[in-house]
Length: 280
Image (cartoon, rainbow, N blue to C red):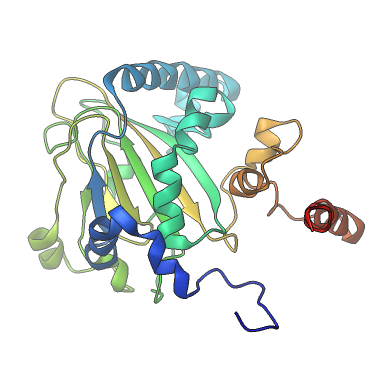
């Protein structure tokens, strides 16, 4: 490396090596905007997460005065920031495969922007059935991804269960396409429960209509560059001290939250600097 070194640079010539076994999936995400990995979770873990999601959602309904209040703000059947309510969801958010994929696409410097549970009930039309990007209200495109979404399927995903539909390549176009293009392009991946759909957060997608007679649940993670803000202040939700693992602290947002003042900002930098000097 040049003797002057670098800072604030996440992409280098070595970055391509991170793709490894994910290379075909990453190419699919780059071109189509989405791809999938089957069998991320086993049945026991899926059963556990399904039950926990219902418990968290019930608690969150109680926090605001009932589900009708959530329905009034178009937020019914969404369990937000699950990892703050259950260690099992914190474990999911830091799953080695999800983290490795995010690093391969975005680089080492990433932050978990949100983790939301999505409950798609039969006979109930979701707000998320409307086409959207996970980075809402953004009508531009960029040369490389700034956020990656990882949708973990806790039930079989298909047209019957209301699986998520995508518009391939729409992360490369600023505007939402015409009805004709939507009709000819819409794709709903067919996947068994325990799979994960990984997609550029700027690709247009929507929840399907559940006609199966059973509840279809999923957990969506949005992981991004730290120029983006978390939907909910995850460090505040978790409480306590930041993890001793500096990378994990950054991923959960402890490193990137705005400092209270200049002195606090400098104190945050003292510990990493001290550890580097002591190692030397």
